[in-house]
Image 1 (cartoon, one colour):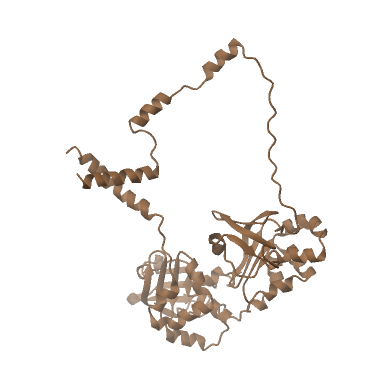
Image 2 (image 1 turned 180 degrees about the vertical axis):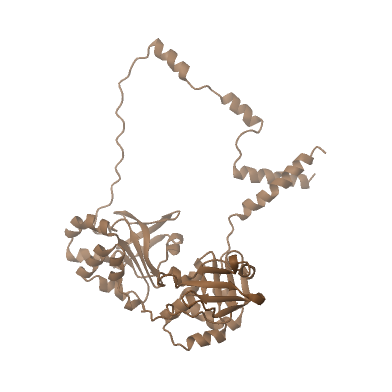
Length: 403
């Protein structure tokens, strides 16, 4: 009977222990592996990889994939779209919210408008990247692109795989038609890098690229993947006095230092810290910098300065352009930053205490509660850390089982 309160407490705390132990676990999905178990989606699966959408789907935490079987994909491929246009069409079939089979029949007022990855790319004008989901009569659910005059081109067929609330893969009957998604899309080599920068707050940097001819090196690396770190106009304008003192060759090296010959999504930068080569790198440990993150903030550290990523101008594999709050300074061209320490406080002249000062000091002195604190600790009133709590629960459980 005496152990009954302990047993009750242990049973109450055990679910908390399970929650603490499982809270750090996370589910990582792989759309390619999920679809590989279903041969009827082999073509759809193949083109998710070809268009690099598979990697983007795997990076996201909440996603719904509207899968097309081989017959539906044959109808889409007969249009002979470029791989870049095909990416837009398929990205319309990837919703940025979770919809399981049950949720399809529980949409508010029988219809829902949800964003797709096509909308998220910034390539979809207006709301053309949204998908209409409507609960129809007879248990059917219809799907249609928002820019398709309200037509529901496809219906729900079946659930392929569901991992609430991480990823849901649902088969639909037909391709979602969208004039905007099917519009001709230029490949990376057809993109105008400097025009993209100029329209979104990086015109000063873009002008420097053109003036030095460095923009051609950036463009030559587009097809294989390119990441650009673009200082904003205000930052570049403040830096111009130093820039003008560089030689022409050093100006080019500085500008190339702001590009890396590989596509690096923001999520990748957050998870893969370390040294990164740049377009200016010409040998080991030359013209590189270190990527580090502090929570959601990604920093680029050279030995001469530290810059932060403050925004994204464009992110569509194989190209991504970020805004940064400082010009990146390679140690090969600029001296290291010197951290200045605050001067130590000057010593105050010694003043002899009077009896009055001593009496006032004793009156203002804090009460020594160490004895009360010790008494509290001896009676178990002190603070308990999370680790101690788990150990106490485990010890209690073991004590009960071995009684």
